[in-house]
Structures are given as C-alpha cells and as structure tokens.
Length: 205
View (tube, rainbow, N blue to C red):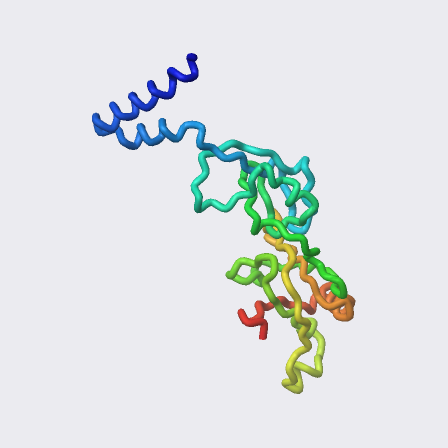
C-alpha cells in the first residue's frame, strides 16, 4: 500500500513545483528511475588488446539518447573484441571503440619506430592513419639517391598505436603495420637511423 501512496505524492509535488516555476526540478523527479545500465571501463586497455570481463564494469545512468554506449545486457558482445582506441578507467564504452578485426592483419608485420620531438608531426598520430616510411641517407655518407636526385625509397604503412612522449627525451614510439615483405627493410632502416615517417595523403595516395 505504501508504494501506491508514493506515486500520487511525487506527482503532486511535481505539479506544485511546476506551478512555482520549478519545472526543471519537477521533470527530474518524474524521471527518477528512468536510468540505463551501461558498460564502463575499469582499467587501462591498450590499443589492440583483447577485452575481458575483468576490464569492464557497469553503471546505472540517466543516459542522453545521443550518447552511444554499450548497454550492460550486451556486455558479452564486446568481450573478446579488441580495443580500437586506448581505453581509460571510468569512461563509458561505446561500440565504435571496439573492433573484431586484428589491428595487424594477415600478411602484415608490426614495426616499432622511435621518433624524436623534431620528427613528430604536429597532427596527432591515431590508429588507422596511413603513413609512409622514407629511407634517408645516413649522416656523413654518400648516397646515390642524394647525388642523383632520384626519388627516395618509401614503404606504405598504417599506424596501429602511438605512445606518449617519453619523459626526458620526448621520444614517441609508433607501431606501424607494413606488408610482411617490407617489415625487415623498415626495421633495418630504423636500426640504422635512416628512417623517417611522413603522413600519407587523406585518400592514401
């Protein structure tokens, strides 16, 4: 019986608030209980990492319809998928932040590239961004490309992950996916210090 008495009381209070100019508060009172259980991130998840149930939690929120979040009853649909972006604790999980695809595809290799502060593009490096790895002459050596004016060797790649700047040095490590046949060459350029990274055109050409 007490539960039945509350609803008329809340409605009466809401009507009184509307009459007094408190329409916003009244709407909130009428919407109490209109909450959605959504999936949250409870610990750091790196790009490409497979999501487990231990990485995820849930929260009950009054969710704006414009916010795209994974509902708690759909948590199984994201467990086992990979993080398409870096996930931070306390954030809501949206469908666009996960992918079923391996970020390094069949026939590709992952090449880590260290960039000094002066080599880092002003445009932020994000997963999926197309880049070119350019071979440049080592300092103090004579290079046929340099003397002849020929176009330098390049390798097409795709950013998989970019780290934050290392304390002290400012070096950023970028994981770049290349064709498996180009991976060893790119790694050799990186080891010799003759590799530079440039952003590809938006259309990939």
